[in-house]
Image (cartoon, rainbow, N blue to C red; front, side, top):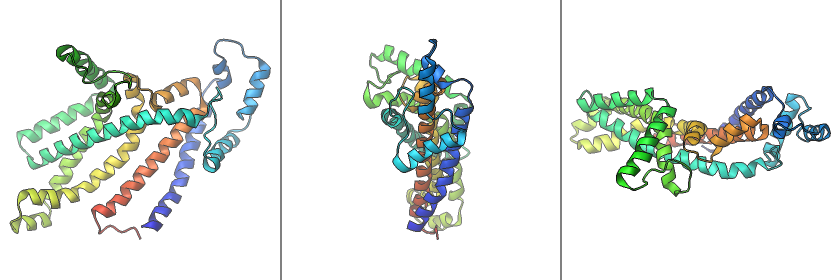
Length: 314
């Protein structure tokens, strides 16, 4: 197992370099001058512009700029500084805390509702409950996050507060602690809930038709034990894969949700940084997101052996 983890970590290095070089090239190719954008509508002093361009290596070729950046990240853990001379890591620390809270909230909501509904549908396959759950997931997939966000914000955040007098689901900011993440977490997890429900239903339904399940049933084991101990454990493997990969998607997909609910996370920061051409900030955020994605996938692979001891990595 140890050699497998080391091998996977070594394999992730080209992924990290490729992803960061790609985003670095995209930001490099954006039209406009970042130093001019920093000055705004005022005409910048040419001497100051020249100094800043030299300081941030903007006169160097793309690959040399990239080397300055990635060598700082890999060898010193230095993500550089913004054009306002603030360390990127200092800004990211506060922003990532908000986005991690949002992504973890969304992942918990997704796992509880998605697995619960999928389990319910699989055990009632072909009945009205199953049909209703499948239709609901189809509707959830069809509605864009932007639309569902505004609808839930109005219905649960505004109208429910007027009817009950209690602010159960705050609609903006993080001043209400964990409650601030409930509504945006549900919006962020919406589409994933639908996919996880369908995946759980299919996986469990196929497992329930397997020979070892029929054998366990023939031995007279209670249905609850057959489903909970034998079927669900085997059906969990594709679900773990989905949830692990989805953690990275949730982190990266928080841009729209954070914009709707005015959450000061990396999504909102990334949006503003792209607009201002804050190259160090954009690449720094993407680099950390890639690292989170790699670690999440590695954790998923390791959990395979825990859930199914037949899986070996040698």
